[in-house]
Length: 253
Image (tube, rainbow, N blue to C red; front, side, top):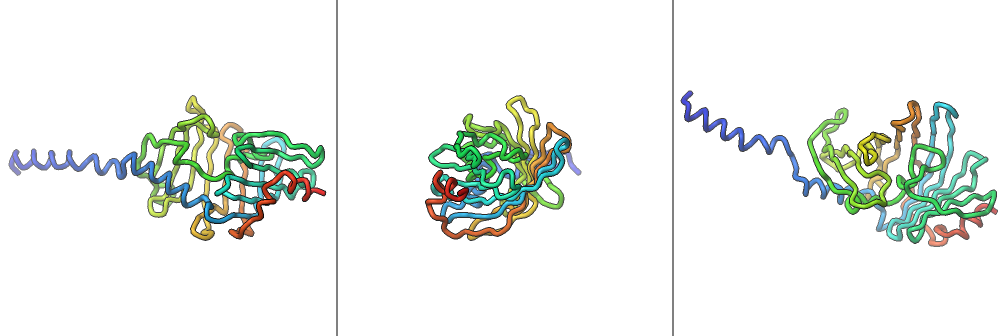
């Protein structure tokens, strides 16, 4: 093979190599966040479901609870109403007008809380049940093709562009064919891994997708994790009266 031909081949490889290392651009990766929001948010309908939580705590043991979930993403409202265990029955988390309230039926008082706080002593956060706003809250800083088990995924590194989010940086494993998030890792501002989340199964509800199983693993406490499964999923309209303080008070009478 002549030297000129070898040089031409090496030049061709140099031209093609960057394309093989980066399957999509950062702008295209940012559009994946837009698609994630669009696929998971129920802005054209409401959503209700029964959530079963199994909280595994290395000190307290295992606690199981059932929670009714109501979402009206178009109005940026949600209600989480605890049904079990009996000692927590009637407790609720109500998001309305950019305010999140916790209701305690024993004291019959509402107290202001935050989306960043943990939900009912679990490894889930209140923000895990709110409408997705990834595209508005985060900017993709790197993207690469990867594998998660048998699935081809895009591995996205994202950084928050505001202080309202629960975690300032995240990693997302998103399927390349249908843009479903299979795993996330949540980091502190210093880069410490705080939590890993897994979404192994999804179901289609109307034109949207919702995970029917979620596993949240506390990376700071060995053996601490929460598994959430969804059932009785419905996209029927929910009366506006459900997303009110008076409704929480009334259902506990």
